[in-house]
Length: 151
Image (cartoon, rainbow, N blue to C red; front, side, top):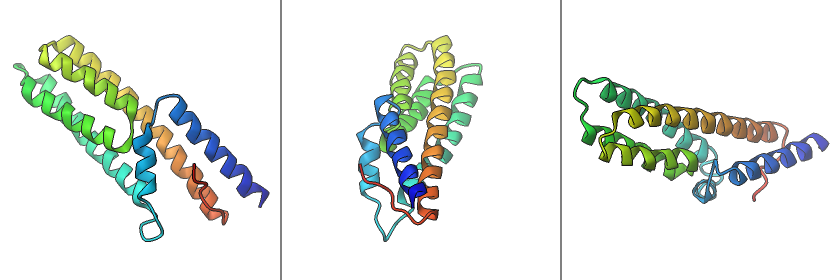
């Protein structure tokens, strides 16, 4: 049982750091509040869809930026989509880069758009890694017979 208590403390500390570092915002908390016994994997499923969608959008963004004549409206539409999905799961830092990216789309600044795409990918993989660690911790607690502490 000590192991469960240690894991729970580790989870609470880890989650707190994600909010303190601005990686996640309150939207993630709201997402967690929608999860219950009837849908215990709700957050993991929603976040997995975000991962899948983001990977597809990165492909689209890369293809669009590789064109000879860049369609900035199309580029902006993809960034807007990514901004919406990152905001819906509370991935705050990804969302911030999207806002910046959209400004560069509007200004038709190819160089800054390319930089933003790289920064977006870094932030995305960073948050993906953090969330996967969070879900692993939750799974360890459940497998050890514990419950996920509500913050």
